[in-house]
Image 1 (cartoon, rainbow over the protein chains, first blue to last red):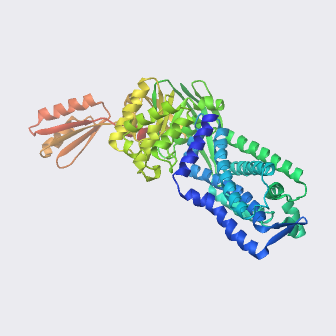
Image 2 (tube, each protein chain N blue to C red):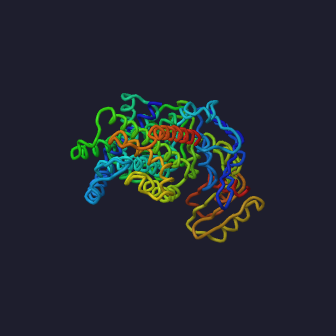
Image 3 (tube, rainbow over the protein chains, first blue to last red):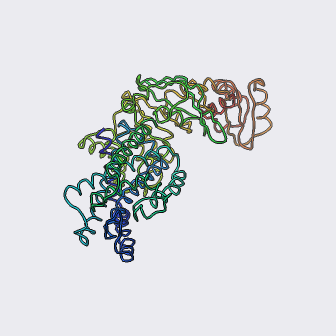
Length: 252
Length: 312
């Protein structure tokens, strides 16, 4: 098991270290989003009211951006499976005498590493400007825990899809069909309460809303409704997607 | 030992059903070099992918040393494979690709370094060890891909059309490496369209055509079994009527025929080469025209393959 994980981590880290593109893609991009969109909206709105509480928009938006980045990272990893399939490396990987689950876990470890780096960069930048709005200590630890679990859940579900689909074309179609509702029918950019009733009902069952609400609960003291249920929902989502992904790669 | 038992495989597309393999059976002994020859679309790569367990057959069973692909890691530890596509990470350097390969086989740090250095030197890749794989030419990528297989001590080495794009020097060194691995007891399965290569290398050759194994034999038996025509080419200063008449007189009309041009006469016979030599001797001793040289041509494996495929 360990040799598979180690080899996959080695591959990803070597790939990353040989490409300066990585810094732009993984670290600068979320920061750009945070600054350009967050600062403009922050100036335009100033603060946002949700659940009867008032928040500075930038820290509020930062939590949304972090959760969006976690989803995007997993998307990038899933896309790379198609590249491997295209160049024939995927067949090679499946032919090695390692547990196939280790191929997924190795990539997950790398994915979590990148996610933690992104969180750290965004957190430090926002904390400098809004030190009183953000919780440290145990809430920060729980926030990180939730982020890692949700990142894993996205990763597993997208790995499952990338193993099911033969070509990237199908994946791209799915991406365009699902990404817009997934992101805009969630609490990433604005509170769910501000949505029309029908859309609000949809956004409540969106896992991206759950993770964003729970993250804000720990980091910003946001009093979201049904936090324990949302935590259970995220955990079930993560376990179910893990089982799906592992079963799929094992049966390839 | 490798065993294919009545393997069948069908690919279904939206518009058609392709029968890739039909009841393929084969037994490959330890230390044997087993060649699978066939035209494009014959089912060679499907056979290899079923052997490595990454493609599931619809029917039949496959074994390597008594294990089935369902034994997962234990099964996959029996072999090392080079697929037809460049199974390399194009963004990694040559060295990193080799290291990754060794790591996935669980090699320790010291052993890994030793073996990577060894194949880098054996395959003349030292100068490119830090180059990214996507910067290399097709031939060098193939070289890296093949070098990986020789890094490890596994009971079975599998190559799917390995020599495509290799230069003659590396190709020869690869072929001699294969022979020396087989001598050590390693079983080799190799698919190719280059019949000359299969003829030189393989202990046994299977002719795969439209998903069926038409015949399995040694290259020599193949040639004697299917060889239908041998040729004698007589090169002379000039061809005149006397020579042509003499040739016509000596030929057995049942088995022989001939063609001529300005400087040579080609006699084709279904009899063996000894018969042809005797015939040429008789012709040359009975006429005054000087024969500069005589070339006797056996039918090649290529002719044999064409003949088997035609029969089918």
